[in-house]
Length: 210
Image (tube, rainbow, N blue to C red; front, side, top):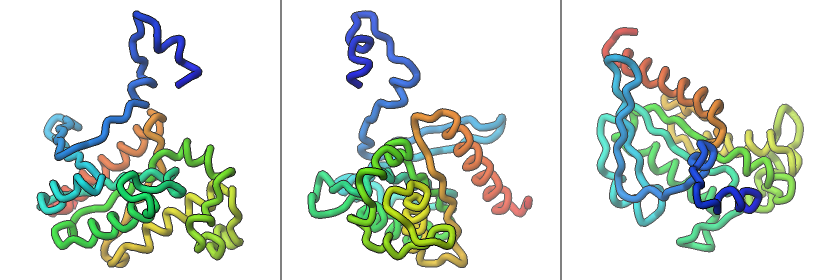
């Protein structure tokens, strides 16, 4: 922000695409978006707020959902909730994830996990040991060897394993994890393409076309 202060403060400033990508607007309530993916295919995406105060508005509202996209910020492994300074944000995210995928009306839904903000995570992991907040990391094996603090790939794999570990039915309910950076347009294009193909495939299966 400070590196761009002169540009941002000019009277004729127009936001660039990168500026727009970095804007964060908290989701409140339920917001619905429709995407025309192909000539005869429309994706309906429903965005809901993840804050504790928002969950009661939507948690019982959905049936017939083909896929859940769960977004978690992996750089928040060492941060506390605004609503509860005693609660670690990633532990809260894990608890919410486990709750959602355990609901009976989501048993037929695909679970797509976006582990976001990898850029901020990579900057932080070398100076804020993940084992301080998740002691189990010290016993975690990565590529057949003990993990070390400061290793971003081992830490990412550990976080992915944490989310897999709360899946109550791993044999029948697959998780589809993706590491994402919302400001990296090429990364998001690839991930969204994967998600689109997966959802289309699941719809074809529902209609016995695969």
